Image 1 (cartoon, rainbow, N blue to C red):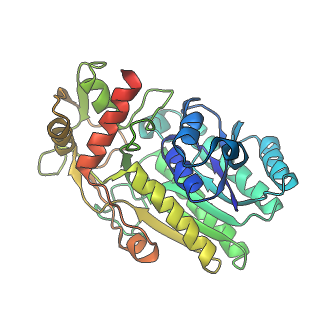
Image 2: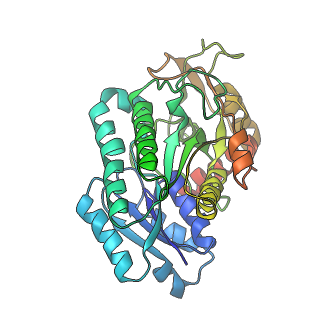
Length: 347
């Protein structure tokens, strides 16, 4: 039974992936700082797993800490070895992710997203752990192409995207330094939304969310007066930005399949877009949410945000070909599951 370390494993995508991995038979160690995640999430992962209570304490462990803490990272790897459950793979979710904040605090983003990743890779190298799954982002493409494939031009439009691309370059260097050892999957997410179908696990940030779906749900709940739509003059059919929204459980399955691909193939580095390949405008998303959940979401238009782009939808053909994976949940399912989660959270 292999042991997987997930950094940021209490976060939105991390928590759902940990649940999938637990149910698939892996031991999971979560490292999370709680900077932008809830302390309740760890217990929810445990409660929703199909593992008996007596076994869960052996299969699921948690460390509170920061990826920049080299001493703690070393301790986690050392304790895993002493317990005869050495860490076989790291799935690296932890990092700062707000596009708008990255324009204001670029030093923070470079320190956490780049320096923090270097810390992890140094410790992995020390303990001969050479399997790495990296949470990258479609932000590496910027607005260079509306349907980018993995070889499209990389032109980030903000510091957040720049840090993600810098780590991708670093991982390429690392792989080429020892191509007979490293197995690396770089997963470029598009726009994760949705929640676990139980309604008990979903996006639960500690700080004000900057992505659209938490705001939609807050407006629907009456906790915000209206939704801000940033720009109605984009070069799109209805003037609002078009994105590729992907269900978080499909993303979680994508991580599992990417990891399995690494385990079952020769050392290599792969880059994969994880998205549905279907574009949805902001207005289309709002109207779908209203229709499927029978609730109104008042909105107003405001100025575009620095770093935003008009249209960004995945070309996901490589992921569909390489992995035993296909996104199964449509935009209606994403809206229903997210709304169920937020109703359970706030009611």
